[in-house]
Amino acid sequence: MRDTLVIMPAFNEAAGIARTLAELLPAAPHVLVVDDGSADDTAATAAAAGAETLKLATNLGYGGALQAGFRYAVRRTAFPRFVTFDADGQHDPAFLPALVAPLLRGEADYVVGSRFLAGERERSARASGNRLFSVVASLATGAPVTDATSGLLALTREVAKVLLLDLFPQDYPDADVIIMLRRMGFRTAEVAVKMRPSASGQSMHSGILRPLYYIAKMSVSMLHLATRGDLAARRKEAQLAS
Amino acid sequence: MLPEQRPFAVITSLALLGLIVYLIRRRKLREEYALLWLGVGVATIVLALWYGLLEWLTRLIGAVAPTTTLFIFAILFLSVVAIHFSISLSRLKDQIRDLTQELAILRKDLTGSRHDREGK
Image 1 (cartoon, chains in turn yellow, orange):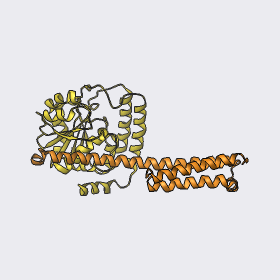
Image 2 (spheres, rainbow over the protein chains, first blue to last red; image 1 turned 135 degrees about the horizontal axis):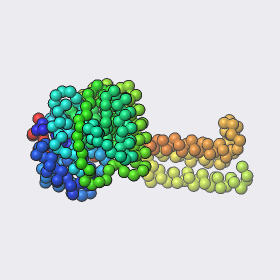
Image 3 (cartoon, one colour; image 1 turned 180 degrees about the vertical axis):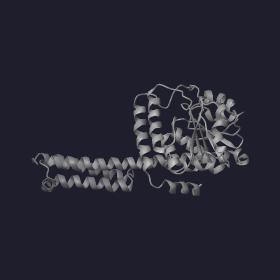
Image 4 (cartoon, rainbow over the protein chains, first blue to last red; image 1 turned 120 degrees about the horizontal axis):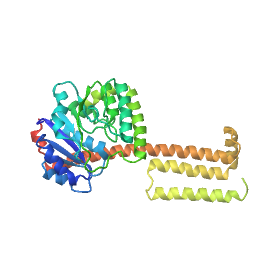
């Protein structure tokens, strides 16, 4: 993992991020924590724990913070591949080698760590929406997609450049990004991982309105990216731009 | 239009136009919006003073009552304005996101970065 940069968006995670980093850094020495405009000492805590930090002046949300990390990684570092990792401790560093393996073997450009590949089941409105879009994404891409909302990803530098385009979703990469990348000619893969319950317990998808908004938004986004005609050209543009 | 309706219509239109001119002079409205709202102010005054125009418009679009014509055009206009604002907001959000990300990177450049030297 020496030549992999781990990008970790964090919003008000000062309480738990030191523990997450203490577990992660021995497995992956290069970690960039993107402090998404936190009100607490997330950035300072992360720096003290041994991570590089990027501090956003205002809260952009998970997708915007992630994209800031990609932007920094592409512009200012030479790492050939990146991993995205949650700050709340729900991801297990033990799965990183398996997650990166398809990239190293040259079999994939974008690898999703999937909770559901190994048969795990979760019963909630969010999980139902997740499964619904997984089925749609599988049909749209012709590749099995079991956990499109997973925040545990491994990707090549070339994919990171594409994610800097304005096509990148505002919220976070999801089934729509998988559809987009496959239509651009990238290879995506899934690796089975186990996740722990989030330490902070607050999912981005709780409530009644948010799942509904999520379903509507994803439908529009997937339809948009599944029907766009200029994706190959945008891929070239991304490589030239950065 | 009943005779007693006209003073109210004219006064309201004049007040609206006055507010717009005031905001432009105080530089609270940018030029692009200033022109738009000036147009609205002038149009309401014209309609308040020249009832025949409204009646002609009503016959033209096949509406029954002149009030319908007013409401149709008002709602259409406000819808277009709302769409325009949505577009502006989306663009502003994109610009803020870009600026925030750039600012973070530049701030990190200033404070020094380990990855500059190690990233391979």
